[in-house]
Image (tube, rainbow, N blue to C red; front, side, top):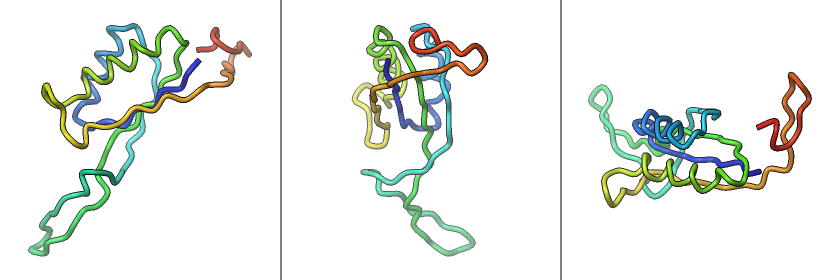
Length: 115
């Protein structure tokens, strides 16, 4: 079992959800997050004053999958999360972490059956 954590552009969320549905991954957690990376923020004007926004809004997806769904899940996120053919800085990152155990609270099931 693996926990896939993906940080993507907010505008790509619906496309990524649709792509995940196509590979039969239906369970995920979505969080609004802010981050600072290669994009290094941008400059905005508010009430006539210019200021720099360092933390940019992103969306964080957390998806627990069985081992056989790891590669299809990653491929779906990359395909739907990329901007254009080549992609751009700020499209996001995917982290794959080992998942030691999962417990379904309602039934007490553990492991692969709980996912």
